Length: 171
Image (cartoon, rainbow, N blue to C red; front, side, top):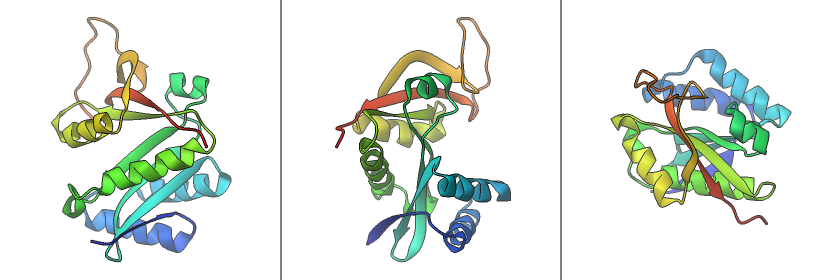
């Protein structure tokens, strides 16, 4: 399988990405794609698309100013919304996307961050991030970006996350 990575540059690429994700069952509001494109144009985000054998297979983003306050305050960019279409999973595409996003970040930053969900659907991502050297940031569980207090009750959904960081070799 031939995998090509490239940064999102055009509205046409955005439309192709949106169509591939819709067909692949990765549901995002239509405005999400336009917001990502505009953030890329404005320099706040870098979106990397993965193409396998000529078809969109996955995507990941490097957000320069994280919505997670500890990353934002420390100037740590965040890998955001890393996804590989189901038919392409377990083929190393997520790893290739992370390698590329880390390489991009290493040009300007000493470290990189990522948040990962905590229920079983996120198991493969949790394992990938651990293999790539990401470690918990030490602030514990978060729900909706806020630290979960001891004894607090939260729902196990996509908003329940653990944030991780990784030191980069700055170039």
